[in-house]
Amino acid sequence: MSGVWQLDQPVYDASHVPTIVVCCSDGRFIEATQDFLRSQGLGRHDLMAMPGGMAEALYEREVPGGALSGARATELLAHLHHTKKVILLAHADCGYYHQRLGASVPDVQKKDLSRAADWLTEHIPNVKVDAYYMRPAQEDEGAGFIVESV
Image (tube, rainbow, N blue to C red):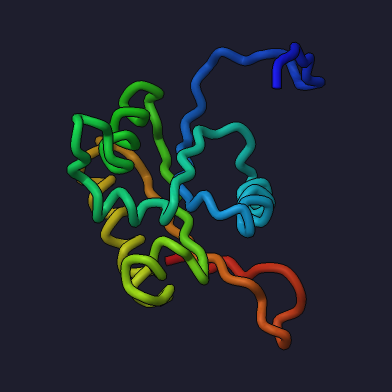
């Protein structure tokens, strides 16, 4: 599709933002992820969305052909943009985990979030890492999503 679009957005701000969000690319959770980030007071941010989120970064650090893995790409982006904070988000029923483990296992995902946070803290100086796990609310919890800190 070709054409030119003018978007009704605020004036372009060339300054880099101090936060990177790393999450899964699953469209079922994107809107809830953005709502959660806004609820935490986060506006503009760098976004790295890929299947499995930071899990890909943990398990696929060495990518053939010299391509950057998610972990190395996050490290590079943090260096280039002088990042002060990284937010990691994983979610229930993740296809990456279904493919890798045969199931989306919350305890494994939460452990991976902790491992990823440790790796980022070790490789990116002076960065704060927050990790969260998101799941659809159960009937007794109301509608929407539940986000818990890991």
